[in-house]
Image (cartoon, rainbow, N blue to C red):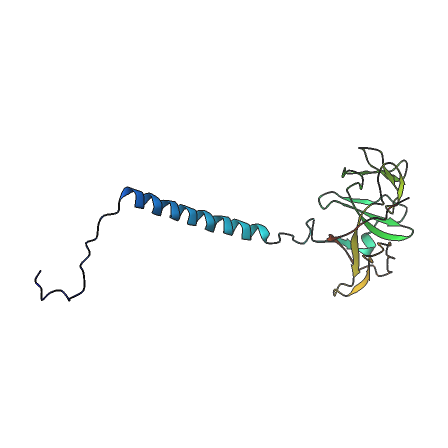
Amino acid sequence: MTAEDTNPGEETKERLPINRREFLNYAWLVSIGFFTISAAGVTYLFSLPRFKEGEFGGVITVGTVENLPYADNPPDNYAKTKFWLSNTPQGLVALYKVCTHLGCLYNWNGQEIVYICPCHGSQFEKVGTYIQGPAPRDLDQFVVRIETPEGEVIVETDPTTGDPIPIPDIPNAIVKVDTGVRIIGDRHA
């Protein structure tokens, strides 16, 4: 190289090969980057709602009014979606299938006409009202909604009181249970 080939004040730098320490630093930074991206992707996918029609946590279509059990029949068990659909003289309720004492799954006893928890013996009426046992409150409920086939709501459970809803005399009305809205049972004395 001659003096004419270089600009004055510009230094020529010679590119040295990467040494072992620099290589390990770059490899460490790249692996942290991949880990961060993977963790962020998994966190994003985990945070997305996965409730679909017919699954616990979503809205379940039970059927039509004409398919509901009569008031003197035992309640219908929806084991996959964790509730009992109970038609009582007071109206229709969907009871969360978990005891309010310690979270055991209670069952319907057709001989005694009550729900009985197998863990500690708490008992509840067909409408979910506490009878006896260590449970601190009535059974929890889900919102029941009866709609026209066009989707117009005819009657719906009041989320503040949880009172049973009357069944309208419309045979083709659709009954839905929203397992994403839980109504906490009243405390007893």
